[in-house]
Length: 249
Image (spheres, helix red, strand yellow):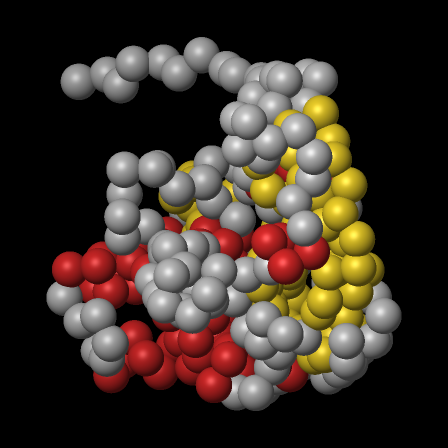
């Protein structure tokens, strides 16, 4: 029997699982902020264990990542090392991984991705910092292409199929959010906190703003240190679009 799918952007979700993705977001936004329903919690716990069994990777001390910041209009030189770190405790705005007020260190694997993540314009001056890991860290990768060699976690073929083909990671961690939706990041923040409670040091996930780019969010803001800052000038910004047909009645 052929499976029926509900389309979400460029990924296909089996219809029987569409309710899971939609329900988690709606429940966290409108019903239960800190303690979700028991049956939904059970499914999410399987999702967390699946990734902990198959997709935990070690990053060695000294590994290099990047972080960008748009210069103030009157600032012609790069920011200092101390100005390129995570926001002070209590001052962090809500982000894709961090709840409001809790600081995590957001890094990118390339200069291009770091610059794209700050959404610059042509002519903008960007301070780009190089960060080096101060210690070995263990991170969960939410990149669907990265699978460790560990044996599959036993949770049933159906659930494993949906995680392999359409992971929650793709829906919540690599999907653009509207700037006016102040609750958009609740699902990804909730999942990130569960990973954090399991003892991992951070999360690797795809960049929404640079196709094929990857980001790293470290829960410990002191796990990496700034080892230099350079000034970049944005010379070109590219956009691509397609016509959206009006919905038929």
